[in-house]
Length: 353
Figure 1 (cartoon, helix red, strand yellow):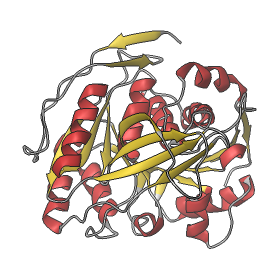
Figure 2 (tube, one colour):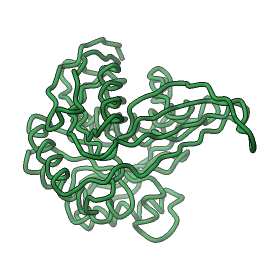
Figure 3 (cartoon, helix red, strand yellow):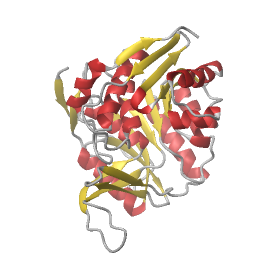
Figure 4 (cartoon, rainbow, N blue to C red):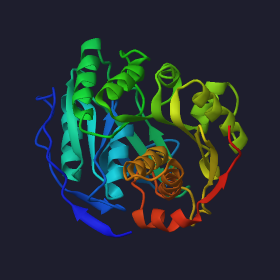
């Protein structure tokens, strides 16, 4: 795959003049067909500013001196947009932004060259703290719940998404919901995206996931923990994942169901059958799974937008997720590592439904 540099388009902030700031251009990466792949729109209802530090060893008492590794915008859809750009595609992130931290979030995205549409809210955007302990090679991700949104703010966000979605083929909604919004919010997102003519890729958890099931979407991605919450039992194997995916397809909740199984890989299911995608052998020590799911969704959505079939798209997603866990804290995956792992993803088809 060739590496191509490109300049992102400037976009105009929506409903958030107090927090928007100038939107910067510039980002680059790799794509199979960068000139022809349409841009992907993402939605982050509850974004973060991630403050990532490292220490040699976390002390039980006294002060632990830390080194700041980086500060970056975060949250499901923003991470997906970053992953799309890292793979050479184009993405625009719709997100909330409030008060001083919201201004910092916008500035970080501008500086990184991620196109985005901030929607202003009254509450303070949350900050998350990520700590990497070099001695143990462990990461700790501490995430507060975020601001409370009222109904009017939720409606403004839906309106902004609906206007932006009209010019896109794929919309990715990823991440948790803040307090104040109904658990049915992603069902409302699904309806707005459907009205726009775009396809929705949904990646969420808990009640927000369960309350969205009555609205059919194009693709749902669940990890094994989220899948276990749907069926009320552990999901550890491809057979377990098949049961989850069959339930989602039978209920009309999605056209494509993808359940990820950590180091095992993922199961991709459609009405035509089920395909096991076994993760490649890891070339290094796993350091953190934070952001691996978002990286996978970025890769598979980009490949779907490029015209690939769901299995091939999911195979790249498995490779990118495998590359992502090799990086500490929320550091982005290495494109070349992901590319090297892609041919080692083993694809095995199961019998049809």
